[in-house]
Length: 306
Ligand SMILES: Cc1cc2nc3c(=O)[nH]c(=O)nc-3n(C[C@H](O)[C@H](O)[C@H](O)COP(=O)(O)OP(=O)(O)OC[C@H]3O[C@@H](n4cnc5c(N)ncnc54)[C@H](O)[C@@H]3O)c2cc1C
Image 1 (cartoon, rainbow, N blue to C red):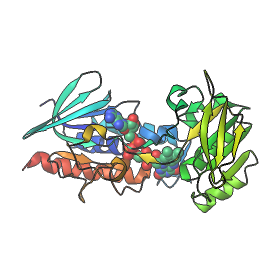
Image 2 (cartoon, rainbow, N blue to C red):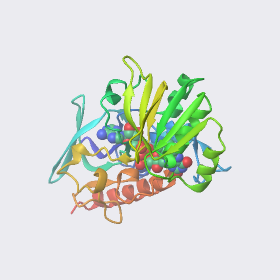
Image 3 (cartoon, rainbow, N blue to C red):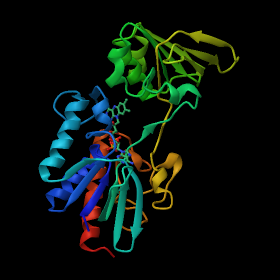
Image 4 (tube, rainbow, N blue to C red):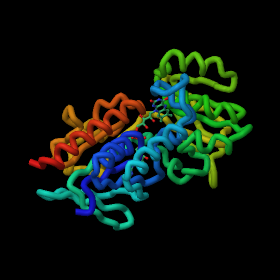
């Protein structure tokens, strides 16, 4: 066996699990398809995390998780896991580049990805006006107009972040009202650059080489309007990146992984932690707690696999 445990996803959940297992003297590999630290690295400020002060900078928090896991002896490697196979005493994990490792236990901590709008130009203009990370790319839209879809927590956080640089941020919510927490809505309504339009959705994205406009539609009347924007970011919900787990672990709504109380799944030797598991509160502190619980369950499994 190459490792005692392989962890899919090096965010708060995966790195906390990795740190706990490595501290217990286990051989651990944490794999991530993008970078190490997870979603908090793409978040300006993380609120509601138990740390000195009212909030902590996302990249600073993410770096702490990386240092904790690496410092404890977990190996960190870039690679997108595309296949997991289970055998009676072993699990094999394969990445998109063809690399394969074996381990006794696997912890899935792959987080969530934003849902797409499902519009034809969305993929074609990805990274060319269709924004995936406001924190990473906001500076590219300085003094330009952008649109954000989604009136929930994530949509408003991203819209307020973009408003620091953009000349105008059109915030579009297809429902009649925003669903973000009231204090966030109050901040959004106080931001003069935000143009909040409930009951509207994006019907078309225009642009040949990059986004030049969006056509929005009034959901009730069907009336359409063209907004000249250089950027569009969608935060209309999240889904779990678990296509490769079909038939491996039990999946629930939007692809989330069904877990028992201690983060075990019904598949022997497969555990899940963090945002990706069904019922997650989707907060960084909760992901850390999940990671620690999954590590404890994996340790018990390693000691007594049956
Ligand atoms: C805009 C925004 C603001 C937020 N603000 C806050 C806040 O203020 N406070 C708070 O507590 N929480 C906040 N959150 C939520 C918080 O970021 C998450 O709850 C937390 O990051 C979840 O940790 P995780 O480890 O489960 O998943 P993630 O942090 O998403 O990490 C999962 C990792 O898995 C990797 N991965 C996925 N699939 C694969 C695969 N197949 N192979 C290899 N790697 C894979 C991904 O690349 C990613 O790095 C916010 C989230 C967003 C989007």
